[in-house]
Image 1 (tube, rainbow, N blue to C red):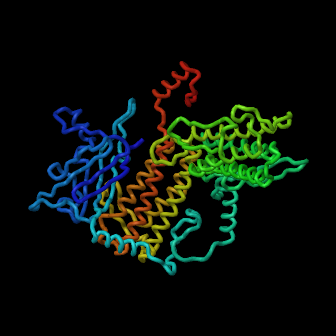
Image 2 (cartoon, rainbow, N blue to C red):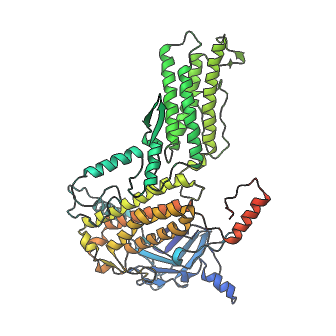
Image 3 (cartoon, helix red, strand yellow):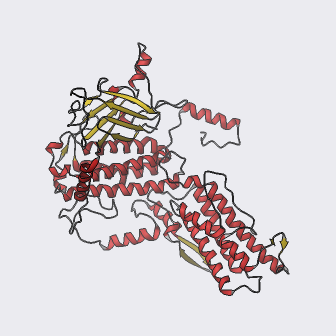
Length: 573
């Protein structure tokens, strides 16, 4: 998996870079060629960092960091801090000024290799980051407030431009500028998408059939077929053919079976206590039904709401301290559970034992069957709670590299691709609002500061490149290649797009571009686009897989032969 820059902060005299993995940190080399090669890829090599800031003394033009100006220091295995000292003035002053936009290019740095793996390097052997030097004090606060006020004004009418270059359907029909309302075809497509929980795609017949199958259940009833619609929350089919899988699919399947049985058992329960109030009996039964249904409904949502599931389990079973990082401790004795089911048991008088004494209200086989039905109901829900706590780590939303199931993750990636397409149109809208219209965007040439890795491109071509990748290229690659396509196609392409957006924020010919391009609103829109692409990159890292090398495949096959009980996902030819 390629090395990436995950964060960067700039102060008036330092730059701190956070990498995705621990990096090579060799000291100044001696005479050994091996040491020289190691130092070439070291994160402590100043020559691997190029800085540009028109307001700086040493970096008015893009320049490599020199040892007498900046000293890289490893403050953590994956964090490098470069401290600068401007010795050209007396006394020495700060290298950067508050409000400056500093562009950093990182080259040749490599991460530490794991056993048997090559050293992970930067995609394209470089990464470009642009950050603004933050300020402090009343002046900086006023500047920020004014900038926010002009960045997000209240618009009373839409800007007159129409972004005709925007691809149809790339972001749910959103186009910047004015235009007529939705046509009948768009309304019908939206209604079908809402019913199927699927993004309509005329070229994806398989996806349509899959969404249709999940959205409607067909049942033979007395010689004819009846259909029932599953609400959208139970359907997570996407244009990437993703869906709930792994731990969530297992939980959802069990939960659906438990719900069907529990609702039937609840309807069949009757109070053994002759003094039970009929209103309380009915209310407790309906409350328990509602809580069970809500729990199962969340198991069919991607991602499920952990807070909501935990809340309903606490209400239903009286469970407390539901955590995923400790061994689950669940009260499983039906006579001791609390919550709604506990209140139902006490009101109905359908306990088996209480205070080590038998139930005096149970007198017949029918009465004992009533108690048995409650115990079955209780066991269904307590075992479901145990499974939820045991698998909870798979439902915690995180950008770190925890294991993720492909089907479920594809749902999130599909949504993120749609978000990026929307954000591209938001950038177009921001450009429209500063009077850089669609025709002008096709003639605005961006000359990137790193012209070797990023050749000059027209502004509209940059946006079209990103939009085309997330609406057509990347979905196709993911559907065709699966996990292997993530590392070998998606991540390299997304990293290139991130570098493209970073370069577009501060091009080398910024002074030659219209003044509107330098406004805060355009800069914020590009920042948002960069953040969304970075989020897509992190989601892809959670499911990516390298292509097994020939030696690795033979070794795994040998392990499979030596330990036949182990499942190794290598197909023999």
